[in-house]
Length: 365
Image (cartoon, rainbow, N blue to C red; front, side, top):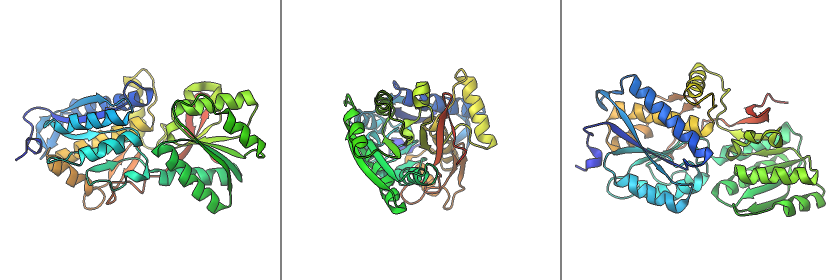
């Protein structure tokens, strides 16, 4: 029998990979460490997955948010026979690069992403799962919000030219057009783009827009907001969950709307406890959707290991039945039920708004 499929003699090890040197990855790391500490403080795993008190351990590797690095990380974690499962990677491009490595070879390993949202990841291999909605939910929800709440009929889009940006652009455009809206212009950028002013100015010359969609990551969104301010533009701005953290930009981001699977003011006792524990452990900080998804992924894997054992195949088979033969998982981000692609189609996207330096649930029109 393969070493990776036998019961470990020491702690049960979960791999964790993301861009930990960046703020978006730091939240992921903090939440994972909190979950592991809580599980071990309560006696570790009990049940079939290990003797009473079997502890959990993290092996963390920084992928820098890079596709090439993600492949090397996946090779490293997959080759370690102590690794039972992996939580990661954080975003869509590194996840797509890594997922084929985890799902290949003689001893494939489960990969659970907290926030990789590209629809192209669905069903890519049977060892891939994610606890977040895909862009098939984000883009349409943003379109409905723009049409119904903002009364927008003309939209402009600036999108990061990667899986994530293209996915949000495509799904927003489809739904907005179905509702009767018009996308005046959709322009791509890359992380090295120095200015988005030509795009903004061209939109203004075309008659302006009722809403600007930033299918972007935070640095690109902040660049767009700074240049809009310099140009005197006051268009409402909306964007996907990669904008999370932009609330730290203060007045620059005030009023920006963001689609996300999770906000810390989400109702429910379990989430309230998580938010309080996270704040207590990390100097009053608030978790974001990346951290909350990671926290849920760790607890979900702990339940799978306790129920099915620490073998890689056993963990995969348990997860594949969550909500379809095995009980749904009630996490801080909501109920997790996997479909045959490892997706969570029942997860709802909510709209948050930046108010006073915080991202809060939008109260509605």
